[in-house]
Image (cartoon, rainbow, N blue to C red; front, side):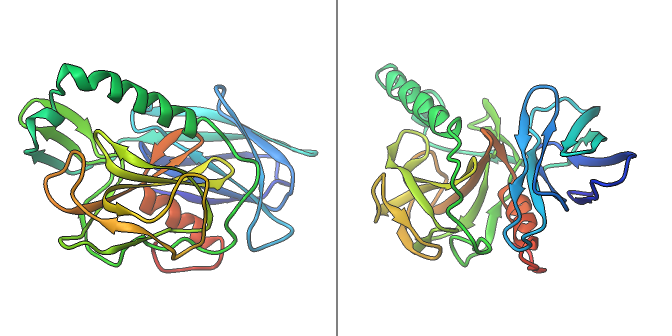
Length: 274
Protein backbone atom coordinates (compact mmCIF):
# COMPACT_ATOMS: atom_id res chain seq x y z
CA UNK A 1 0.00 0.00 0.00
CA UNK A 2 1.17 3.51 -0.73
CA UNK A 3 1.15 5.74 2.33
CA UNK A 4 3.58 8.45 1.26
CA UNK A 5 3.06 10.26 -2.02
CA UNK A 6 4.50 13.30 -3.74
CA UNK A 7 1.92 15.55 -5.36
CA UNK A 8 3.25 17.68 -8.24
CA UNK A 9 0.71 20.48 -8.24
CA UNK A 10 1.41 21.72 -11.75
CA UNK A 11 -0.08 18.61 -13.39
CA UNK A 12 -3.81 18.65 -14.24
CA UNK A 13 -4.71 15.00 -13.81
CA UNK A 14 -6.29 12.56 -11.38
CA UNK A 15 -4.09 10.93 -8.76
CA UNK A 16 -5.20 7.58 -7.33
CA UNK A 17 -3.81 6.00 -4.17
CA UNK A 18 -4.87 3.70 -1.37
CA UNK A 19 -4.46 3.66 2.39
CA UNK A 20 -5.39 1.23 5.14
CA UNK A 21 -7.98 2.10 7.75
CA UNK A 22 -6.27 3.51 10.83
CA UNK A 23 -3.26 4.74 8.83
CA UNK A 24 -2.28 8.21 7.59
CA UNK A 25 -0.95 9.74 4.40
CA UNK A 26 1.70 12.45 4.22
CA UNK A 27 1.28 14.38 0.97
CA UNK A 28 4.21 16.54 -0.11
CA UNK A 29 3.81 19.38 -2.62
CA UNK A 30 6.08 21.84 -4.38
CA UNK A 31 3.81 24.68 -3.32
CA UNK A 32 3.54 26.75 -0.15
CA UNK A 33 -0.22 27.24 -0.34
CA UNK A 34 -3.19 24.98 -0.77
CA UNK A 35 -5.89 22.92 0.93
CA UNK A 36 -7.05 19.31 0.85
CA UNK A 37 -10.72 18.50 1.45
CA UNK A 38 -12.54 15.19 1.86
CA UNK A 39 -15.98 16.77 2.07
CA UNK A 40 -16.09 16.75 5.87
CA UNK A 41 -12.89 18.64 6.69
CA UNK A 42 -10.40 20.91 4.99
CA UNK A 43 -6.70 20.65 5.83
CA UNK A 44 -4.31 23.51 5.12
CA UNK A 45 -0.88 22.96 3.61
CA UNK A 46 1.96 23.18 6.16
CA UNK A 47 5.54 24.39 5.60
CA UNK A 48 7.92 21.54 4.81
CA UNK A 49 10.45 21.13 7.67
CA UNK A 50 13.39 20.44 5.38
CA UNK A 51 12.69 22.16 2.03
CA UNK A 52 11.73 25.84 1.96
CA UNK A 53 10.06 25.57 -1.45
CA UNK A 54 7.79 22.64 -0.48
CA UNK A 55 4.79 22.03 1.73
CA UNK A 56 2.99 19.02 3.12
CA UNK A 57 -0.30 17.90 4.63
CA UNK A 58 -1.17 14.93 6.86
CA UNK A 59 -4.41 13.09 6.14
CA UNK A 60 -5.36 10.57 8.87
CA UNK A 61 -7.85 7.80 8.09
CA UNK A 62 -10.06 6.79 11.01
CA UNK A 63 -9.88 3.17 12.18
CA UNK A 64 -13.66 2.93 11.66
CA UNK A 65 -13.65 4.71 8.30
CA UNK A 66 -15.90 3.37 5.58
CA UNK A 67 -13.94 1.20 3.19
CA UNK A 68 -13.94 1.99 -0.50
CA UNK A 69 -13.23 4.87 -2.84
CA UNK A 70 -13.86 8.57 -2.42
CA UNK A 71 -12.68 11.78 -4.04
CA UNK A 72 -10.49 14.37 -2.37
CA UNK A 73 -10.20 17.92 -3.65
CA UNK A 74 -6.80 19.61 -3.79
CA UNK A 75 -6.91 23.38 -4.28
CA UNK A 76 -3.68 25.27 -4.86
CA UNK A 77 -2.97 28.86 -5.80
CA UNK A 78 -3.62 28.23 -9.49
CA UNK A 79 -4.40 24.51 -9.74
CA UNK A 80 -7.28 22.26 -8.66
CA UNK A 81 -6.78 18.49 -8.59
CA UNK A 82 -8.93 15.46 -7.86
CA UNK A 83 -7.36 12.73 -5.72
CA UNK A 84 -9.00 9.31 -5.76
CA UNK A 85 -8.61 7.74 -2.31
CA UNK A 86 -9.26 4.03 -1.80
CA UNK A 87 -9.52 3.05 1.89
CA UNK A 88 -8.75 -0.66 2.22
CA UNK A 89 -9.00 -3.24 4.98
CA UNK A 90 -5.88 -3.89 7.05
CA UNK A 91 -5.35 -7.32 8.61
CA UNK A 92 -4.61 -6.26 12.18
CA UNK A 93 -3.62 -8.84 14.85
CA UNK A 94 -6.14 -10.33 17.29
CA UNK A 95 -5.48 -10.25 21.05
CA UNK A 96 -7.31 -11.79 24.01
CA UNK A 97 -6.42 -10.09 27.29
CA UNK A 98 -7.21 -10.55 30.98
CA UNK A 99 -7.30 -7.42 33.16
CA UNK A 100 -8.76 -6.25 36.46
CA UNK A 101 -12.54 -6.66 36.19
CA UNK A 102 -13.09 -3.07 37.37
CA UNK A 103 -11.32 -1.88 34.21
CA UNK A 104 -13.91 -3.70 32.09
CA UNK A 105 -17.01 -3.05 34.19
CA UNK A 106 -16.21 0.11 36.16
CA UNK A 107 -17.89 0.66 39.55
CA UNK A 108 -20.75 3.16 39.44
CA UNK A 109 -18.82 5.66 41.52
CA UNK A 110 -16.12 5.88 38.80
CA UNK A 111 -18.43 6.59 35.86
CA UNK A 112 -18.49 10.35 36.40
CA UNK A 113 -14.69 10.44 36.56
CA UNK A 114 -14.40 8.42 33.35
CA UNK A 115 -16.84 10.74 31.55
CA UNK A 116 -14.95 13.86 32.72
CA UNK A 117 -11.62 12.42 31.57
CA UNK A 118 -13.09 11.50 28.18
CA UNK A 119 -14.45 15.02 27.67
CA UNK A 120 -11.13 16.52 28.79
CA UNK A 121 -9.18 14.48 26.24
CA UNK A 122 -11.61 15.22 23.42
CA UNK A 123 -11.28 18.95 24.10
CA UNK A 124 -7.48 18.69 23.94
CA UNK A 125 -7.44 16.74 20.67
CA UNK A 126 -9.97 19.10 19.06
CA UNK A 127 -7.58 22.02 19.65
CA UNK A 128 -5.10 22.88 16.91
CA UNK A 129 -2.16 25.01 18.00
CA UNK A 130 -1.04 27.05 14.96
CA UNK A 131 2.61 27.03 16.04
CA UNK A 132 4.90 24.10 15.22
CA UNK A 133 7.19 23.23 18.13
CA UNK A 134 9.37 20.58 16.45
CA UNK A 135 12.07 20.97 13.80
CA UNK A 136 13.82 17.59 13.98
CA UNK A 137 12.80 13.94 13.32
CA UNK A 138 10.75 12.16 16.00
CA UNK A 139 12.39 9.56 18.24
CA UNK A 140 11.08 6.49 20.03
CA UNK A 141 10.06 7.25 23.62
CA UNK A 142 11.85 4.12 24.84
CA UNK A 143 14.47 1.78 23.39
CA UNK A 144 12.54 -1.46 23.77
CA UNK A 145 10.72 -4.17 21.86
CA UNK A 146 7.15 -3.74 20.67
CA UNK A 147 4.75 -6.07 22.49
CA UNK A 148 1.45 -4.99 20.94
CA UNK A 149 0.84 -3.32 17.59
CA UNK A 150 -1.50 -0.49 16.78
CA UNK A 151 -4.91 -1.62 15.53
CA UNK A 152 -4.91 -5.00 17.28
CA UNK A 153 -8.45 -6.31 17.72
CA UNK A 154 -8.78 -6.80 21.45
CA UNK A 155 -11.13 -8.75 23.70
CA UNK A 156 -10.88 -8.01 27.44
CA UNK A 157 -11.97 -10.72 29.90
CA UNK A 158 -13.95 -12.44 27.17
CA UNK A 159 -16.51 -9.63 26.87
CA UNK A 160 -15.29 -6.12 26.07
CA UNK A 161 -14.24 -5.72 22.45
CA UNK A 162 -12.18 -2.79 21.20
CA UNK A 163 -9.06 -2.00 19.21
CA UNK A 164 -5.60 -0.96 20.36
CA UNK A 165 -5.19 2.77 19.72
CA UNK A 166 -1.41 2.87 20.05
CA UNK A 167 1.68 0.69 20.26
CA UNK A 168 3.00 -0.96 23.44
CA UNK A 169 6.69 -1.14 24.34
CA UNK A 170 8.10 -3.63 26.83
CA UNK A 171 9.15 -2.05 30.16
CA UNK A 172 9.27 -4.68 32.90
CA UNK A 173 11.19 -2.37 35.25
CA UNK A 174 10.73 1.39 35.62
CA UNK A 175 12.62 2.95 32.71
CA UNK A 176 12.88 6.61 31.64
CA UNK A 177 10.30 7.59 29.02
CA UNK A 178 11.46 10.26 26.57
CA UNK A 179 9.51 12.99 24.81
CA UNK A 180 9.36 11.98 21.15
CA UNK A 181 9.88 15.58 20.07
CA UNK A 182 9.68 19.18 21.26
CA UNK A 183 6.31 20.38 22.49
CA UNK A 184 4.10 21.56 25.33
CA UNK A 185 2.72 19.22 27.99
CA UNK A 186 -1.06 19.69 27.94
CA UNK A 187 -1.95 16.87 30.34
CA UNK A 188 0.02 15.13 33.09
CA UNK A 189 -2.18 13.27 35.58
CA UNK A 190 -3.58 9.93 36.69
CA UNK A 191 -6.53 8.72 34.59
CA UNK A 192 -8.82 5.74 35.15
CA UNK A 193 -7.97 3.71 32.05
CA UNK A 194 -4.57 5.07 30.96
CA UNK A 195 -3.14 5.46 34.48
CA UNK A 196 -0.43 8.07 34.96
CA UNK A 197 -0.57 9.88 31.63
CA UNK A 198 1.31 12.53 29.65
CA UNK A 199 0.03 14.20 26.49
CA UNK A 200 2.33 16.49 24.50
CA UNK A 201 1.12 19.06 21.98
CA UNK A 202 3.61 19.36 19.10
CA UNK A 203 1.56 21.98 17.29
CA UNK A 204 -0.52 21.95 14.09
CA UNK A 205 -2.94 19.35 15.51
CA UNK A 206 -0.31 16.70 16.34
CA UNK A 207 -0.24 15.11 19.82
CA UNK A 208 1.81 12.26 21.28
CA UNK A 209 0.34 10.26 24.17
CA UNK A 210 2.18 8.25 26.84
CA UNK A 211 0.28 5.93 29.24
CA UNK A 212 0.82 3.79 32.36
CA UNK A 213 3.69 5.70 34.04
CA UNK A 214 4.78 4.85 37.57
CA UNK A 215 6.04 8.41 38.04
CA UNK A 216 5.65 11.69 36.18
CA UNK A 217 8.49 14.20 35.84
CA UNK A 218 6.49 16.96 34.13
CA UNK A 219 3.40 19.08 34.69
CA UNK A 220 0.81 20.54 32.35
CA UNK A 221 2.03 23.77 30.80
CA UNK A 222 5.71 22.81 30.71
CA UNK A 223 7.73 22.96 27.51
CA UNK A 224 9.70 19.78 26.83
CA UNK A 225 12.49 18.98 24.42
CA UNK A 226 13.03 15.91 22.24
CA UNK A 227 14.68 13.19 24.33
CA UNK A 228 13.76 14.75 27.69
CA UNK A 229 12.76 12.21 30.36
CA UNK A 230 9.11 12.92 31.15
CA UNK A 231 8.61 10.07 33.64
CA UNK A 232 9.18 6.41 34.44
CA UNK A 233 7.36 3.47 32.87
CA UNK A 234 4.96 1.54 35.07
CA UNK A 235 1.77 -0.50 35.34
CA UNK A 236 -1.00 1.97 36.18
CA UNK A 237 -4.46 1.99 34.60
CA UNK A 238 -5.91 -0.85 32.49
CA UNK A 239 -2.91 -3.10 31.94
CA UNK A 240 -1.81 -6.74 31.77
CA UNK A 241 1.67 -5.88 33.03
CA UNK A 242 4.29 -3.10 33.04
CA UNK A 243 4.72 -1.38 29.67
CA UNK A 244 4.53 1.94 27.85
CA UNK A 245 1.56 2.66 25.62
CA UNK A 246 2.50 5.25 22.98
CA UNK A 247 -0.11 6.85 20.75
CA UNK A 248 -0.65 9.63 18.22
CA UNK A 249 -3.61 11.93 17.67
CA UNK A 250 -3.62 14.05 14.51
CA UNK A 251 -6.46 16.42 13.64
CA UNK A 252 -8.54 14.74 16.36
CA UNK A 253 -8.11 11.24 14.89
CA UNK A 254 -6.22 8.33 16.43
CA UNK A 255 -3.70 6.88 13.99
CA UNK A 256 -0.88 4.34 13.77
CA UNK A 257 2.04 6.15 15.48
CA UNK A 258 4.84 4.10 13.92
CA UNK A 259 3.38 4.50 10.44
CA UNK A 260 2.86 8.26 10.72
CA UNK A 261 6.11 9.20 12.44
CA UNK A 262 8.09 7.09 9.97
CA UNK A 263 6.54 9.16 7.17
CA UNK A 264 7.20 12.46 8.95
CA UNK A 265 10.83 11.47 9.53
CA UNK A 266 11.21 10.81 5.80
CA UNK A 267 10.63 14.55 5.30
CA UNK A 268 14.07 14.95 6.86
CA UNK A 269 15.59 12.29 4.62
CA UNK A 270 15.49 9.68 7.38
CA UNK A 271 15.36 6.24 5.75
CA UNK A 272 15.12 4.10 8.88
CA UNK A 273 11.72 3.45 10.40
CA UNK A 274 10.69 5.38 13.47
